[in-house]
Length: 359
Image 1 (tube, rainbow, N blue to C red):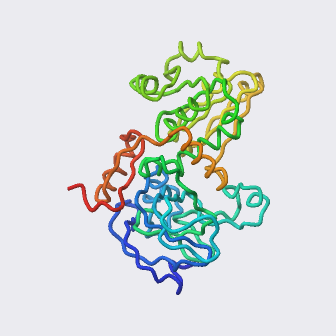
Image 2 (cartoon, helix red, strand yellow):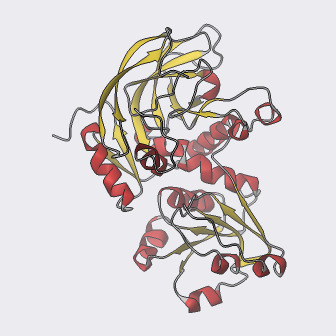
Image 3 (tube, one colour):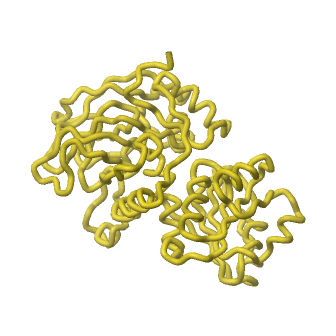
């Protein structure tokens, strides 16, 4: 394992954290030369995910410093390798969480690279050549074309960036349950944040009755009036929870903070499914009775494979779905991370990589 190899000759400007203080500072490093299967991308925008916050502060104990975060990368191709298929210079493209997988296991062969045991991420991972991967808080990115997707021309590039993580995460969960193709179901979305607000948009676009479940009564008008949710339940209100028992076919739980899932399970109909995409630090307390007396299921998932990610992007192009964002300049990354830690964003920060400063 090494930060670079002799093939890493391309000097790149970016932004990195060097210790668990999590402070992001300008950082110059080397990327690999564009290989036969690679595309080089001039990064225009990069979303800030809560995962970035965990990594810069080493909250999961796995960070390899210096770490250049960012896995919601949008840009334009500037160079194409000789064996690359389906991409050409000048095209708008995106790179999400995946940098590499084995390409040969049953999951890679069935377009589920995101579940490959040898999966490596676009930052804080180990690439095939043994180098540490650096993410999208930088001006240039080199990616194997098999982990790149096209961005529909009608989508705003900055607001499309969070789709590469938040978007595919909720889309994959809905598709897994047949909710992309089959309308008319009653679905719940727990949490109205970066993932939750996109889930609401998808749910309405796909023809479902959408209920937002939140701890914040103040979000009701936002959920209904701006995002189009049909109902809103305050998760601390016993009367509302009681009224909602056995009313939902499917619930998508996007919350990463510690919370009880008993009242959520009881809102599911018989045979209903609770799909977890949030990652609380502490384990869930999973009560048996709501499961065995309701024939209910609990499952989870992480992002999606590359074929599914491209499908998600195309669907977003069809319905004109993007994330609601706050665009920032690179000199405001630390401020954005501090605000993200306090959930003070509606609903996703995106870095304008080419901008020099907020002044």
